[in-house]
Amino acid sequence: MKFFIDTANIEQIKEAQALGILDGVTTNPSLMAKEGITGYDNIMNHYKTICDIVEGDVSAEVIAIDFDGMVREGEALAALHPQIVIKLPVIAEGIKACKYFSDKGVKTNVTLVFSAGQALLAAKAGATYVSPFLGRLDDVSTDGLALIEEIRLIYDNYAFETQILSASIRHTMHIIECAKIGSDVMTGPLSAIKGLLNHPLTDIGLAKFLEDYKKGN
Ligand code: G3P
Image (cartoon, rainbow, N blue to C red; front, top):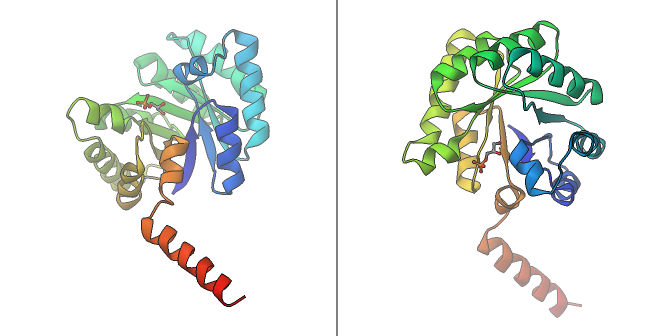
């Protein structure tokens, strides 16, 4: 399973990259705003900075909600750096734009996916990635992981090549359950990624090893 970090925070991206396990980055307008990155030029420069830090795919979201605007923004984003993936909302215009870009061999990430039907259309349009938001489904008392399972089943039935990018990951168990289901990618916060390391027996065991070493030296 690929590990993407879901942030526009440069320090966190660098920290995840330094761990040696990072396969890419996802961003969205809210994550950009959270870091105080506003204005077209600043946003474009920020994407370039991120691409210079990581080696994998970097999802950059369009703001337009009409086909022409999505194509215009997507082309500008794709021209920024070869690692950029165009992130498009799963609305009719977004599906059309996804097909337009996939026909041209430009990578896409269809986002804001909350149903199997939306994921099916994204795959039909040739999306590189589909982003079901599992945490936001959990927030409204709906099983987010069940959606990942449904999409996995449908994509496997027809050998769709679209990769399931489980998004809106909130904690370590989301990551582990996604791995069990066979999600191709997960994107989550640094806290959830680093949280996978935590185990009290590891801490106790390490302290004991170091203590015993000191006794013998
Ligand atoms: O990648 C999607 C993500 O940014 C949404 O996460 O935590 O805002 O639901 P969240």
